[in-house]
Amino acid sequence: MAEVASAGSVRTITLGAIADDYTGATDLANTFARAGLAAVQTIGLPDADTPIPTADAVVVALKIRSVPAEEAVAAALSAHAALVARGATHVLYKICSTFDSTDAGNIGPVTDALRAATGTRLCLVTPAFPETGRRVFQGHLFVGDRLLSESPLKDHPLNPMRDADLVCVLARQSAAPVGLVDLDAVRAGADAVGAQASALAGAGCGAAIVDCVADEDLAAIGAAALASPVSTGASGLGLGLARALLASGRVAPSPATKLPPVGGPAAILAGSCSAATRAQLDAAERTMPVLRLDPERAVEDPDAALTSALDFARTHLVDGGAAAVAIATSAPPEIVAAVQARFGAAAAGHALEGLMARIAEHLVAHGLRRLVVAGGETSGAVVDALKVRTLTIGPQIAPGVPATLALGAPAGALALALKSGNFGREDFFARALEALP
Ligand code: ADP
Image (tube, rainbow, N blue to C red; front, side, top):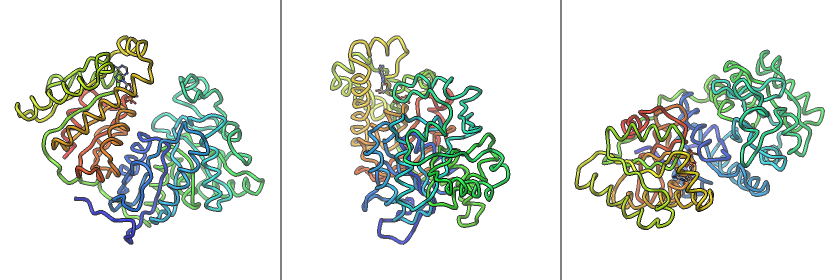
């Protein structure tokens, strides 16, 4: 079992992060772990009872990307206070690498509030993550070879991104003017970044977008950011901060955390309808029993769907001795469209997430301790229902998806893999089962 420190214990963390959504939090925690930090993610705000395992970095996963700005600010300030109380000397506000936000927020208002709370004159901000194709040059964000405003993000249902000039985008949602730390400063190193930031602060700026086009740029940006108590960015900045922290010698590199064995049979719950997840289910069919629930019938009568899912699991796992089963509502686009036309997209999505959460609750109540969940929203519904409080980040299964040990659920420790729909190759489920101890 991982060593656990309670709120009152002396063990402190060095790096804190507040993520504006759950899958972004896992991605960042996985990035910290890959860089060599012992990393833990909390689901929601940690309180005095939250069991936080010993770690160098703690990521608090919130859902504040698209809520009203005052709500996002209040939640972020509480998370910041909790992280600082546990010893964090720097807190990263983790945003999406495509800068998902509107003129009402929430990147500007939260950054302003964290800056005020820490007495910081200027906050460095960059969503860049070159290895995933997110680059910032002259303050403009590129997604692959397109400007943000010409990428598919321009039509995002909640946060349509129609302006690639992040200095302007952030200024529209910030209290103080926003400046630019350009690539020349970044290439000249952390001190030059710090000097340009000080000059901008002297001119009245409260934040600066930082250019970053190559992986090597992250170290200088991370070192400059680490010198102040807060920064705002995506997993790329997280990587820069982790590298700078390790280079400073304040933290020794940790090998990938070996998760303690949980054991027993496993279940895969798939609520993602992405092409990747559907291909992974087809592949799983060759190695394990797969139940494909009829989504229309499942929305209409979730109790009946729950019963058939639990019967299926019992038949194969208990009576049949199978090592794992998969249960899915995943469907191709034409079926999803029909379900959405009949019930409405939000209502159908909510009903099917709720069904998956109940299936997970019942399986865990019957003793199952190893779960793989496919789908970002679906994962959120499942961890909330299981009352998971923290995830200790273990070895990476696929880019962005670590094996984790979940603590805090009344049922005890769980081995969990939570994946955003599009992540992982075709053999993802087999790999996940191998990686979950
Ligand atoms: P992803 O990570 O691929 O976006 P999510 O779990 O975040 O996956 O979102 C998938 C959404 O689709 C969830 O709200 C889920 O309940 C819903 N859903 C799952 N199966 C179906 C289906 N057959 N028809 C319509 N909606 C579905």
